[in-house]
Length: 290
Image (cartoon, rainbow, N blue to C red; front, side, top):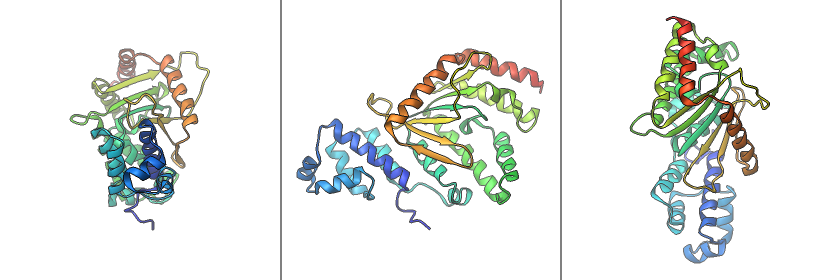
């Protein structure tokens, strides 16, 4: 079993990238860090290439040199810390633990954008909707235990707290209209879910749009999530996360992230505005007559 006191590879790579960005914004070189902190230039290189773990003390020294803001400091130190609980490891055993890396990054992200084509995004799901989806996965994976099902439901519901007061993290979701038409768990479960979507859409930190099936569409793409650690930094490239149940991955290549940014903009242009989207949800809710 891996040493859980060490940040997993994905977190370490993201941390390395963010530290490199901060150094470059200060126009500092490895030799400069050597002079300021008494380190070898190779240590800086190994940290920024995620070849070695970096201690909290070293991170704090680098953040001091880079004049990091309080918010940057808080996010990066949190990203480097030990955050997962026994419940998380029990709910998502290998090889599904890539998802735990996503939870860590989601927890510190400054803003999140998501394109979703299959189901209501997890952070907006009701308990009944989430439980139906997770229990149904036993048809594919019969090793999924009742305890793991309840752990996964609890983790999914806990994620919602980031987007509710007092945290109120910024999130922008564009959903394919087919999600509203697809009844999950029966009419009562679906009606409750649609009502919760409307409630979330009214929060000032939430932007929810529906991409209607009736509008011409030339680009088709599976669901993806874009995470920004500092939305006030115009030079920062987003982190791309793709989750397809059996496989999930982060794309940390900055050039590829540009393509996903453009795809999100494409879906934004064809989507209904937030008020029209609420009307579309209300329309489907009325059809359920629950």
